[in-house]
View 1 (cartoon, one colour):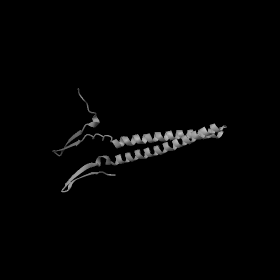
View 2 (cartoon, helix red, strand yellow; view 1 turned 90 degrees about the vertical axis):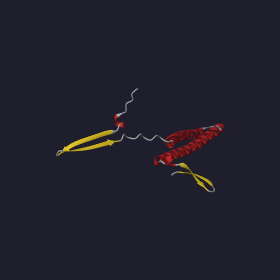
View 3 (cartoon, helix red, strand yellow; view 1 turned 45 degrees about the vertical axis):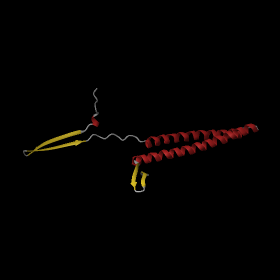
View 4 (tube, helix red, strand yellow; view 1 turned 135 degrees about the vertical axis):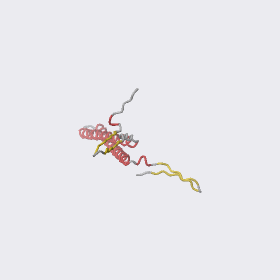
Length: 146
């Protein structure tokens, strides 16, 4: 089975020969093939996943907020005490859920943006364990950029 390489992935070789006043001048040049793009890191994937989950959570919060407004309107229109209590409870529950979803969405979006910024700075690959032997024992440490 033969495997072909796209033209843009191959190295380019150029050789030029000029004759100037009886003297031949040659020049050779080679351009290396473009390097493969770096694979996505866990921070990149996690950042986009967290960002997406945060947007979804905020959307759910909007839905519960709208439901809370409608339940409040039903509460104002209710004629009996039992119906007023039930619609007031529904409005309060929907409002609390909306607030919780907005907070969750905000935290997830902030976490996602933070992960994407950290990944863009390249700090994920810079942490490595280090061990140093001393007369008293061994010191072990981890380092990285933040």
